[in-house]
Amino acid sequence: MGKQVEFYMTHTDELAFLDALGAGAVSLIYNAFKDPEKMKIVSLKPVGQDPYDANLSILNSSINCRPLYHFVEKASVYTVDLLESEVIQFNRCVVTKTWLKNGRLWYEEKARSEGKRRDFLRWADSVLGWIRKSYKAGEDGRYIGPHALEQAKRGDLKLGPPTDFIPPDEVRRILGQD
Image 1: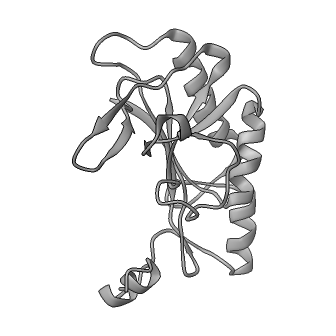
Image 2: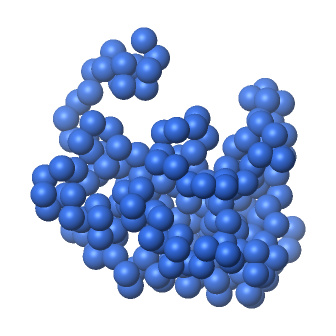
């Protein structure tokens, strides 16, 4: 059973969050990738620039976190083993029209093969705790980053999944599949 915290972050909030974690100590990797040599993210761009950029993992190099990954032949991609790896899954918030869908940080406390190290668990708890302390708790129990909150108050963004039905042809158009 893992631990998680859900949130609303804009790209501005993401950059501030990563900076607060310590730019040199943490790194980001894709949770799905075609080439292990290119799994590390050098510069975080707004979500939607790459097919795999909405689902990432955070690593802490100061405690020597190493991801375990496997090749999925049917999909021809490598995937990070989130249950076994000492990583925090970082599901990023995606904007659909004027809606900001929530994201989450999640990690598994126990691996199938052996327990995860105490250093990792302390660090992962502190990262989730940083969100809870630094962001405002929303009515839905999710935490709201300062830039996302500012945009929501101005009416530029609505937080949560769209409440109105989006027809399938519109979804395909938004996703560039038509």
